[in-house]
Image (cartoon, rainbow, N blue to C red; front, side):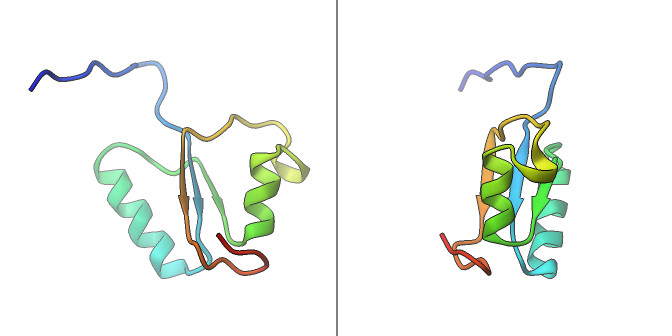
Length: 78
């Protein structure tokens, strides 16, 4: 199988939307081992939507390349 070349100038922007701190830690550790650190983390659905719409404290930010979403978040769900 041919290896796909990766862009070297930037890593993926990952948004982790997880309200369970243990689950969030385990996901971060797993991604860290494959060289994809979490760039933004949110703890409820309202924050996830603010981040995706670049509102509030998330106004100056890049769109995430990957969204890791807990489908049963507090305040809103999947």
